[in-house]
Image 1: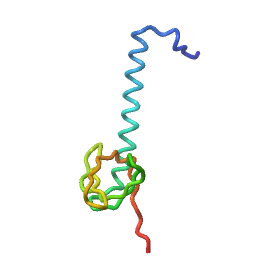
Image 2: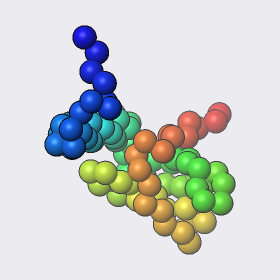
Image 3: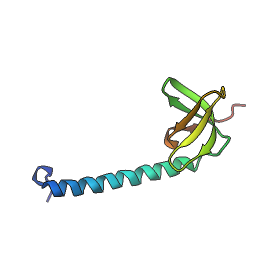
Image 4: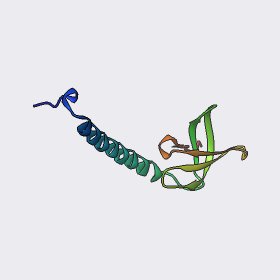
Length: 91
């Protein structure tokens, strides 16, 4: 039998919300770990910044974010690992 959300009490909805938020956090952590496993300090990466595509070098890897130094060396970005894409050397 399907559960109707309209039939739930406030306490039941709050408990359901807690479970949903925990599951979302778990899935985001899994995605971040997967993305972090592909990154290394010194790796050239690209991502979509506020002003369009950006390219830089990974300078520090944290648990939930990566510090990227822009190619020009002037700007530094704190980026979620899932938003970064390693650049392949073109030969």
